[in-house]
Image 1 (tube, rainbow, N blue to C red):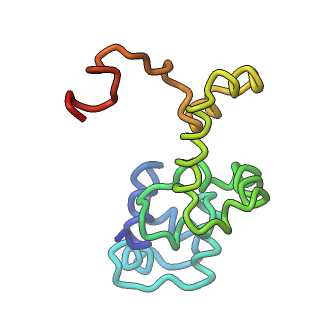
Image 2 (spheres, rainbow, N blue to C red):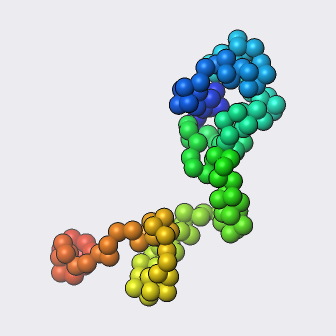
Image 3 (cartoon, one colour):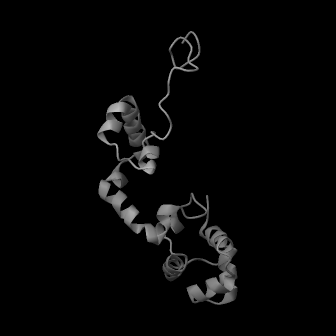
Length: 151
């Protein structure tokens, strides 16, 4: 579990900023900034708003316990990508990874037809769909199966 003060410290280091820069951005004393970075002082809602503006990352990043540093979609400049994902309805799918695995499986089973129907896929789209690697042939297979001999 990653805590907010750990994220702040990591972003300050990554961007080569000082605690006094953080203090100015949050409108607090340098000592309070140090206390926040060490986890001794709580983050208030106004602090959170200022963190979003200062580091230019979404509020959701600060509340996510998984990642230490923001990913591409966490940056405010990429808000349109996040909004586009929201419009697809994927945010309401209980297990989007499971759905994507199923879609990938279908696409890979119908690879040739899919690629001829959508020749303009970007490299990123091909990667997400599992199409960025060459189609698997029979090289290395024993007896034409995907598993060890006898399966």
